[in-house]
Image (cartoon, rainbow, N blue to C red; front, top):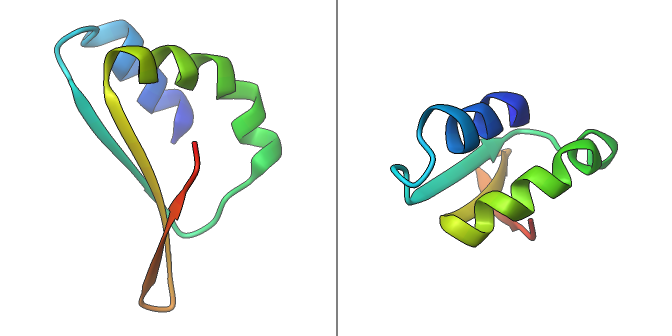
Length: 63
């Protein structure tokens, strides 16, 4: 998921997509750490939010 997000936000549509929402049913912080620098760069140019949805509840993630 993060790879596709970064490809879109930094590759195909830089400065076009101004807002993004990441939604997942689980979160792997080790995987996120691999993409953290890219996500931080994206956040400088676009509004980004993340949510975990599980058992009918959503929790906002601090990206």
